Length: 397
Ligand SMILES: Cc1ncc(COP(=O)(O)O)c(C=O)c1O
Figure 1 (cartoon, helix red, strand yellow):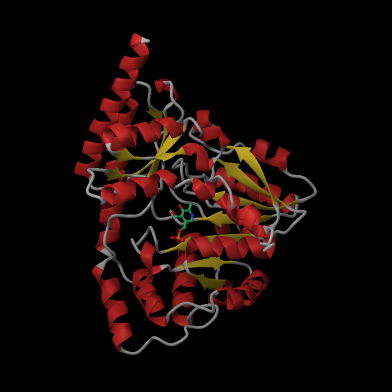
Figure 2: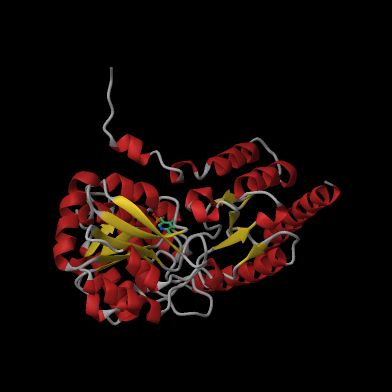
């Protein structure tokens, strides 16, 4: 009898199946069906040209050898300098560990901080991969519900009540996927005080840091009191539409950075120099496209959110950041799964059921704002027609 390690069972989470509808919608779209894909956070913008040109020049210059385990010196310096400027927290290049995307950074960080017998607190709803990230470490995940009535903000008292002797780390995500909530400095200060008092690590997944709509992003590392126990995870995937380049990082206290370097050696052995050279240009030069993207995401949010809130049976909270809307579909009489599959079948729009984000949002679907405004208008028409058809069915029942 062949045997697998127990990790394979732990990885088989609801989150691992979250994109089933997306895979189906993509397959139908590839076959020529008229489908609008709003079920994945895959920015539709092109990487700013100066960044692409930098990678090409670097490739031509032969920058194709190993790029250093922790990352190249220049890229780490660029990440540290930008982080220092954004947070006011002095950060040295030695505190930066470069990873292939924030996803790998999350995985590596959690492996260094938590293990079997420990607990990791995660606000719920949560990004779909967190379940597997925590499970892989062997630690138990403890969900703390975000407060839907207050725009999915976190109640620090609820968080404090979830801490036990076994809690090792709190995994925060701000700006938040899937709700678009952005944590305020006050909220973070209360959490920092708790982390300090209960001797916990505070890990911030900040991949949407540069995508907020009129509210400031506050990094967990901007709180000086917990600088020796806070970790910021970021990437260029969303801010610079570089998701396929796989370039992210962990910013950590020096001892944790050292452990992470030991982990990434056997894990990925470092990233390509030409990718990091492009990353230096991304971080050190101004790219007008970044501002265009920010403005466009905001216009998209305004359009889709106001349209959804005027549709029968649907409601959504106005996101303060990120590139998603979480839509409550319970007013249609369906749960998120049935609504999403029905909409794909009858309206040709693919949204992601809330199931993969946690038990509290099985009555929701997530909509990505990763299509141009005209396509989103079309999607709204289709969603509205479908919502009205459901209303008509329930009225005649
Ligand atoms: C909250 C969150 N964290 C991490 C990631 C992974 O990002 P990256 O492309 O940098 O690996 C995503 C991607 O959508 C995300 O939404």
